[in-house]
Figure 1: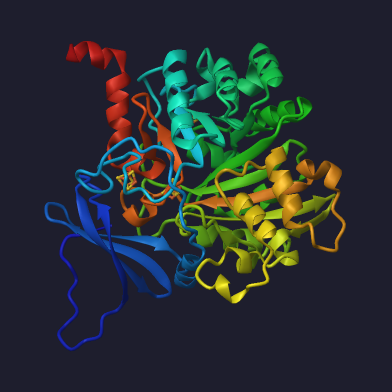
Figure 2 (figure 1 turned 90 degrees about the horizontal axis):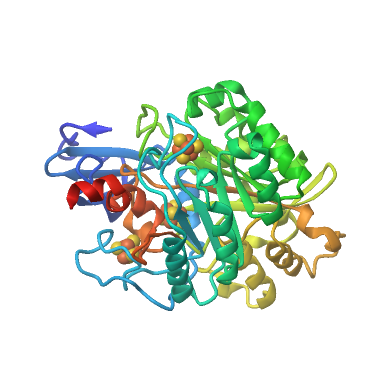
Length: 476
Ligand code: SF4
Ligand code: SF4
Ligand code: SF4
């Protein structure tokens, strides 16, 4: 919301809000880097900032101040990458990256292999359309840069545009594995999986992990968010993936007034579908193409956690969700459950995950097992891919002392993750979250740009312009 003039409390009157902290952000109009106040009001958290040219802006960061503040104790010291690629010059977020002031290495690197798509969604943070297709050589160089930064990188996600329409996408998956990257994922809308038999035959042989865009089970949801009813297409894609014994995480963009009521149904559906190992919810962030929105009335992480609790009949509770400590703890919350038929046991009900991952006060618990703590740190991290053997192994280690029966032989199929990722837009961008970001966008010149910086500060547009052959010809 733009506030044309700053509402001033009268002298002697009490402020209507609590000043919590000062940080840095950007102007939603001109992207200038500006100071931003984080304030608490009516039990919620807001960002308030002023651009000298565009006035005051206020936006909702969290609908639950208590959850926002409580999350801060889940803040793990970062790990330094083996290599930085930029120097500090203009200050965060203009020096990405990673610059030498970045506070965390990269758990998950994203490579946008193209900008085109076979859909034209009204909501698309990538603003998919004409632009570029990366070559195998470019992708090889980017993967090498990731190996140099990380040594033994954990996860690469191929994205776009729509990566499955890139003619060499499966060769890229194979190349990433050859470079030693442990988990390779494709982030897809699923259209080609559902409709192109020959492509899917080849994909089923390569078997990447699939992040499947899956916003709900109702036609109206898809008509609003994706521009057409895609329910049958999504179900067909999922059934094919199940037949091919592939592992899938559903990814749902959740928008105010569109599909908030579907979060519980999505979790229940995922639990029952044989291909699905987890669901990721992303409150819509308003970057690229988006529907009209009110920054003071956005979906935030607590709305989704509470929605899941209210809509799953006690299967999941609010206190089953724990902030992810590897990034800044207001970026992400998640939980795991052990699933055996109809029985769903969230891990925090049998193990006090909070005590292990509370880095501010956990010196108060000297008896905690180091092995369990390490396993939980691995699970509560962007490196953890639901459905992978690695995640199953960490889960097994976390529950090793718990006297309840788990089918350890088939754990991979019994562990289910529910994750909420709160990506930022120009209204909500907070540099202290960015500085500890562990999700990076790899670009062909070898830089690793934190994902929320890539989408909001102008990096995405720069890279698209640089790589677009038509624009290159215009410049020559
Ligand atoms: S987000 Fe990280 S890499 Fe980018 S400028 Fe800030 S500290 Fe540097
Ligand atoms: S949101 Fe995804 S599927 Fe939709 S247009 Fe953008 S890239 Fe394509
Ligand atoms: S991508 Fe954004 S929300 Fe995710 S860890 Fe990085 S800064 Fe936080």
